[in-house]
Image (cartoon, rainbow, N blue to C red; front, top):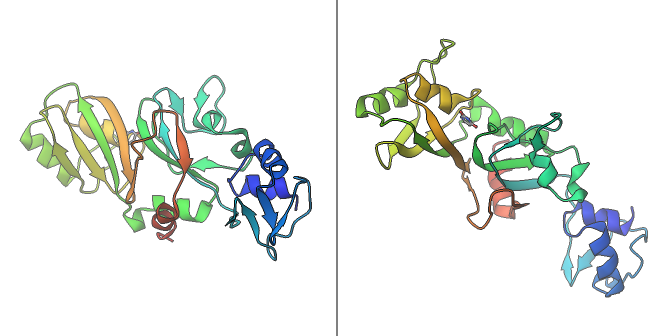
Length: 234
Ligand code: URA
């Protein structure tokens, strides 16, 4: 495999950065400096290092993004801004998908990966993966409605939601924690008590917390600890 392909697939450097770092003598294969980014390497049997740190190869990519408003969680939707457009070139053709979807008008934590099995498990109702959202409502929520929504809301299509937790901060704002993810669930839950969600932001997914350093539209790779949280639901 080409050295620059290996390094960009591992998410460490883009191909052009790799060429630059090779020229600077910062990339080694089994301790030998490699200056040619197109050199053939065998990642299974050799240790490739960048600035002295070994690069481990993973066929999977795990990305945390702070989804901005106005973008859609889809790989192809003509006329729409796609969350994938915000990624670097090196991730564009890696068969990535979002783990579940946030509405166009919802912001916050979205996980993007090519690990289908872990994504499936994270979304499966069997695994009760909790998702936390901050919301703002058009009208005050009564304590009676809060309690009844927590127990289970009957949506317009007759579906009764699983128990959730709703913690109010003011009479119109709060946090909701769900362990399921039906289409437009939160908006439909509040609609069932004749209220309206005016702002919605996901801040947590299965113990992974949105990195406060990421502005809307920014993203980073998951840390090893976050990857473990995500893949543990297997
Ligand atoms: N519930 C919603 O209504 N929208 C989202 O984007 C996520 C949960």
